[in-house]
Each structure stands twice: as structure tokens, then as C-alpha cells.
Amino acid sequence: MNFLEIAKARYSCRSFKPDTIGSSTIELLFEAVRVAPSAVNYQPWHFIVVATPENKSKILEAYPREWFKTAPVYIVACGDKTKSWKRGDGKDYIDVDLSIAIDHLTMQATELGLATCWVCNFNAQILRNNLQLPDILEPVAIIPIGYHNDEADTNRHILKRKPLNEIFSWK
Ligand SMILES: Cc1cc2nc3c(=O)[nH]c(=O)nc-3n(C[C@H](O)[C@H](O)[C@H](O)COP(=O)(O)O)c2cc1C
Image (cartoon, rainbow, N blue to C red; front, side, top):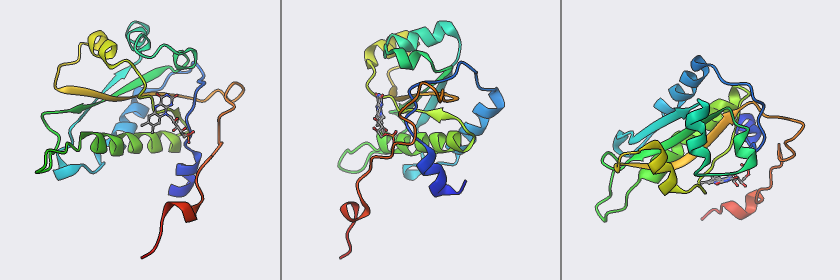
């Protein structure tokens, strides 16, 4: 797949097969994260890979959804507030940097035939407590990842997007 094909193949998967993901595949995902750009190249991120039933249940408490349970692995994407670049007026670029890194991860996953979903509507306090995150780490997103379950997942490949003429203009 070329880049546009990968970008169009990615979608929010909300039904996964139970098959887990090997550690070499996980490392490949993080190689894509590793090369992501960030403000001043500060790379203010830390990712927690959660695959054991005990630790997965701690994540589920923060986002209790039936579909979410089906993912074999969760990746918790955190920003390190002590490392992110702050502009002169105080604007913190932590979310921007994390979004780029997470996008690299989801695109690499797609290229490998894996499915993902961005999840941000979790209870941050529960997640913090359950994972005992230090105050400096801000959980930005949880990415459930695995192989999509075709039969149950009707959401696949529904690209509802604005037309080109609505998203940019020339001056
Ligand atoms: C920042 C962000 C947060 C999101 N949070 C959630 C979430 O908490 N739960 C969920 O089911 N989907 C979540 N999504 C998925 C979006 O609903 C989805 O990307 C959007 O509807 C477009 O669909 P697609 O990803 O299948 O192309 C999130 C996406 C983004 C980019």
C-alpha cells in the first residue's frame, strides 16, 4: 500500500479477534513512533503496552465498553509534561506531539494489517490511579489494537469525510 492507501484503509475498529500481537510487531509499531517529529525534537512521550488480563481490566475500568473489551492489547499514549515544548505565550504542544506519534503508530499498524481505534473519552482519574501514573505523565489516548473481526465490525471502511472543496482554499 502507498501512503494514501494506508490512510484510507485505517478506520476506527470496534470489534477485534482475540488473537494477540507478537512483541516484534509491537517493536515495529514503536519504530514508526520513534521517527515521528516533535516540537524542538523533544519527543515528550511514553507509551505503556498493556496485554495481561489483570492490567487490561485496570484500563477497562477507565473506559467500560463491551467492544473495547475485545481488543487483545491496549497502548496507553502519555505525554511527559516536563519534556514538552512550551511556546513563549505558554501554549503547551504536548497534545500535538502525541497526536503525530499516535498517528505514526496507527498508520504503521494499518500497513501491517492491524486495526486500531483512538480512545480519548476515558476517565483519566481512574486510569491514572489504576496504572499509578506519575503526575508528570498525561494520558492522551488509549489505542486498542489487534486484528479486526470482519463479521462483527460494520464500521469498516466507512469514510464519511468533507469534500476537498470544503477543506482548503487558495489565496
Ligand atoms: C482525538 C480522538 C479521540 C477519539 N476518541 C474516541 C473515543 O473515546 N471512543 C471511540 O469510540 N472513538 C473515538 N475516536 C474515533 C473517532 O470517532 C473516529 O476517528 C471518527 O469518527 C472517524 O472515523 P474513522 O476513524 O473510522 O475514520 C476518537 C478519534 C480521535 C481522533
